[in-house]
Image 1 (cartoon, rainbow, N blue to C red):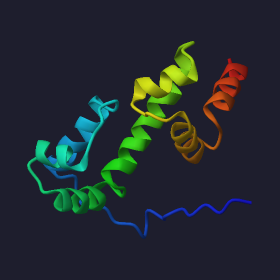
Image 2: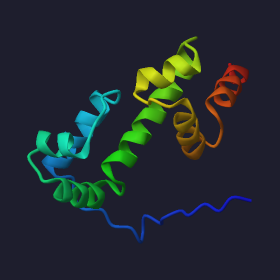
Image 3: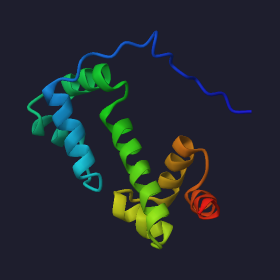
Length: 125
């Protein structure tokens, strides 16, 4: 049995969304396939790398790259539902270089592999 740690929203307090955090999240959402580095993202929102890490985590509850992983998984799920593209093509389209890393990330967040997700969604229709 897998152990899942759920943070209670009553316990976890997030900082208000700062404009620079909103801008960083927007950049990651608008270009998830870009080969982002923390330096590139920090420079884009005029913060140091360490400052971006701190303020992003305080506001979003995850690091910029955890957020990017979530964005890519959401986009993968959308393509799996709405297209007939191969899993390999979708992996590349959303910005991952490794299919195994993408599948592992997808399974971690969605609870099933991309192929299982596609079959599951097909049975719902």
